[in-house]
Length: 318
Image (cartoon, rainbow, N blue to C red; front, side):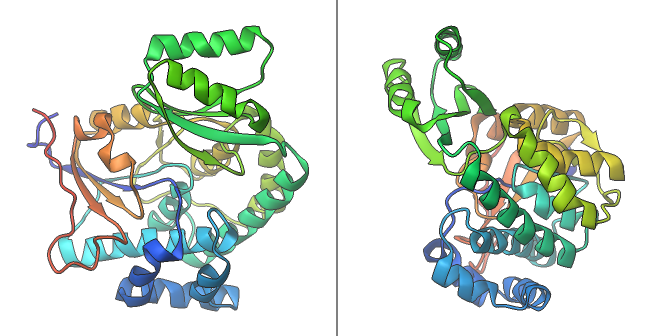
């Protein structure tokens, strides 16, 4: 990939650890965030900012709402202040919700309502189902040895699922929490590193019942339209352009693994040369497969308020 290619993609990242200490200043001071918050507050009938401040633990309903707002506000700023005009859109994991709003597949008030309702749905589901399962991220693991480790675990009858492939040697694995320490030790023995553990877990075929519940209890109340930009699916890199495909993609997030390298390959094929990653992200804009293929402009709560273009800009390798 060379920097002569003109197409741009806006990428809404998945949700990592997100708290008021890291994002509060942006949400309070940024005019684009304040405008989005005002709309969200009107829809919900309460102050998202206040509840995020008071109760916004990682992945809580209020943290999710604040993350959605911050992602779209960063995109608003990138458009208005720095001329972002994307040809393609992508949302990774939770970032699909922002992608749905940005591309007009759902209007912003409906995405806000859906985000709150899905957060409650997931919380209720995992309170009684798969209560001992977590999703753990590992990186810098040698691929062949790591896959051999997984085969050994499978041969012993241990349940697990690969919930995400983010880069070479970078995976997310869902497994029972009582097996986590042994798994971390095995990864360490391979020379790999542990990154973080997610509770509740995500993106596993075992959560098909959650998908069906979300579809029946939440999605059934919303009319999802066709996106006005091509959207790259995080499950397989396919290009989503119809209402039906958009709905399927949003549901796939419950029980299909995310595959960022497939998304990268698809965007390369679409002629994308620049990625604008808008929202709180410490990972996707820095991954090797990202910076090898694109120029990257990251607009996030940590840098968006700076007076000059706030990019963490990385020149793609020629």
